[in-house]
Image (cartoon, rainbow over all chains, first blue to last red; front, side, top):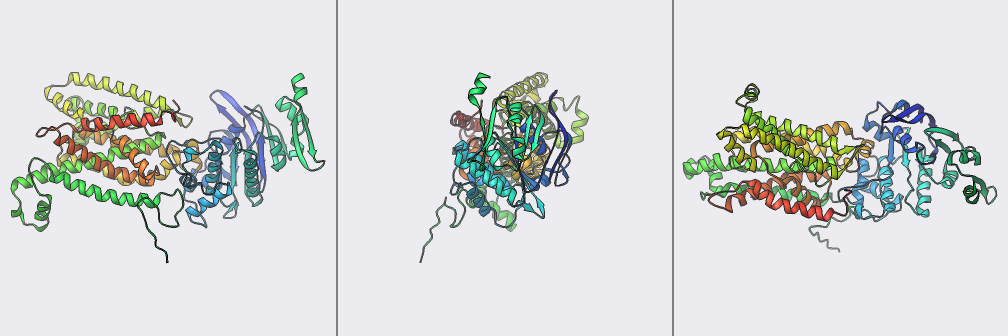
Length: 264
Length: 363
């Protein structure tokens, strides 16, 4: 679905991404991880057509660099890290902005907005003012807006894609899990999800495919078990890690070895 | 059996919480009525006591003997162009204020405050002073449109400069925008001052009166000079609404929602510059309408530009006619330039918004 070939991104004179290749398939939850400054957000901004790049990115065979914004908007939704609003919009009005380009199917706009709010556990928040919500609630409202834009994971026979930049950064554990489940279900229903996460344990648990970045390059990519190895993680994050399952054979976990990293 | 009672603010049963569409639509209708009444009041009031109804009846029925020749002149050649010009200017100022605020994602952006009007004035003064001399061929080619055109070019250059200076990576800094506006305004003021220095006595009189902001000299020629610019902008502005709504989430998100941001910004900037240029050309510096009207309406119907822009056109027209009425009454039989009235009301209002938002602004 998403095909990235040898992309380079320069911001000013500095090259941030040095030739990235990656693929993300439909029906898969792809997670990009890596330390601060490894180029995750820059990569996501290139993939969504927000910044210029050298190389080739195509989504469902559509070349990102030359596609019209309205065409891309029907194919993918993008959740930014944060979004401030300068005007007193209600939550209903913010979520409805997902329908800006008028691609709307099935339910009428108002009930689609309510469905999206229910999906992110914000039933009854429609009439509240966005600016008066907590950071975590605002983040979920923005996700509801993105879901409204690309509600059906498959549209006119083509898979759609969610790009999420740290979607759970200001959420409590319950809502972190809930958002991860939304992403999983979107992928299982035939769409694609590409998210930047910092939480290695949630990555281990929910991702189908992991891209580990370091210094503007892909250090490793593949199945979580293949990527999230102590040697890969220590090489990239610079601290020793233990990886195992708890209870044995069930949930996968990643644990930084704090005492040995302090003495190291 | 159930009885449903609909009160003014409550949407009808079954509407979605937070959806203000229903109320906004009704407010638009109410504003149309208010505007018609205000316009009739504006035409009817003045030094000569004329009944607008009798004049309207005389014109419609063709019975010319019902009104005197004086009344005809007063109504048709003095008051009607003044009322129409006031409506056009008020609507254009409020709509360009709201558009600029949407574009800059900031409720304090206004062509008058951030130097765009000053740029438009510079353009207009350049032609007033040099129109008979160095720029004579251009002035005669453009005819009655040469002052609006010059003001448009001045406004366009200053809006583009302002956007370039205050926006980086798709984010607009409020502090940079306001400070850049002061600098640009001062620059335009300096050049305007230089031109005024060269002006002859007659030009000087024109400039002084015009600089304070007034629609007292309204004529049909002035109405015809700006209507072809302002009316299409007002008609076109609702098509900018979805884009402006999306822009409030930032340029990147607007792009993700399907807005062609680069094209959109250019169209919006040209629109603001053209509307501001037209207003400045015929009425000088009438300030604060573009701040006060959109802000009041956001409090009333919310910031959705699909309703905000048409509501601004209507309430802007109403407010300018009211300001004009005050300007005519307060020192009667003389009259104040309307710019003094709008500044006296608008400047404290601007401070009020500033105080309310002090905690929210990322300065």
